[in-house]
Length: 197
Image (cartoon, rainbow, N blue to C red):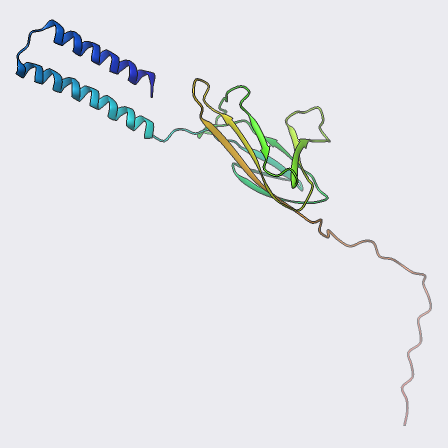
């Protein structure tokens, strides 16, 4: 519940008690006062309920992949990786529904691979000094999820934002042909003469 709602309830109840103690009203007047305060309190409760159900501007988490010189951006993604490849990526900053950067609770960021036997997340070996440069490293054929979550609520309570990337590791496939294996040149054979008669 919002603190504002609780404060309003306390104030209304205090005012109601003070009014009832300070005036010597008749039954009809007391009924009017109780009805008025009941209306105010019920209205506050309904407003609080509507506020709780109102869609929030949820933060979400972009991720950027660099795959075969192709930049792919999205919130929830899938990738396919051959056993003999690695896939560099960067985790974007958390953003709200307007696309603006949104803060998260310090120390709440968690990155987990559901099955590290399929692939792991490691520091990009070509950018060892950049902590944000990461890469997916395959270990076995199969599918696993890379899950990222953090607390977007900077005060008390928890409001979790999440990102899920599904990764599939497949066997290394053919990418072309090996060079021709040339032998030594030799004389061309003469064509056989046709049999006559």
